[in-house]
Amino acid sequence: MASSLCTTAATHRGSGLWSSSLASIPATVGGRTGASHGCSLLVVRATVEPSEKSVEVMRKFSEQYARRSGTYFCADKGVTAVVIKGLADHKNSVGAPLCPCRHYDSKEAEVGQGFWNCPCVPMRERKECHCMLFLTPENDFAGTEQTISLEEIRETTSKF
Ligand code: SF4
Image (cartoon, rainbow, N blue to C red; front, top):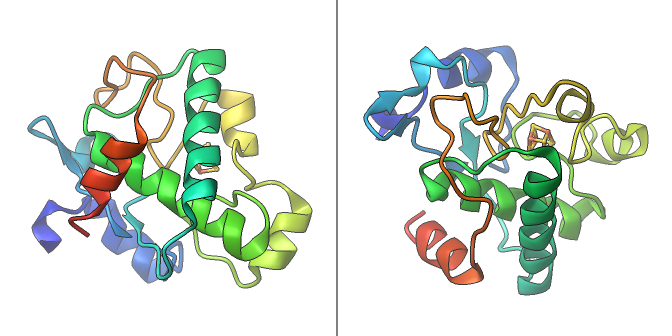
């Protein structure tokens, strides 16, 4: 399994840029590996299942924001699903969709600052989503869709 993870994941694990609340996201998408795209996310695992309501709220937000920002979901919808669940998990546990791809000393303090509340500042300012939830069309990992169903999220994340 480790071989299917982005090689940068190990780097970030060592640097603390890693969340213990997060699931493994395959870094090989359509035969391409994460090593080539400089991804920095790679592990998003919900320790407690987020409520269905929060997953639905974050699913709708993700679809709307993808349309509004002109970005696309990953060709591997499993990545999209796991990140959406991670956002929903944070919405449940800390009251805001804190980015699920980072480690925080204090999630509550981070929510107050707002920098990493989704869509985070790097996404809003430069369309940089290190979680690979919102990908610009030229990104090698971008798919062609801006929608994902609740069933897709359920199906793809049930394997984790
Ligand atoms: Fe995380 Fe920012 Fe991407 Fe949202 S937009 S998933 S906060 S990296």
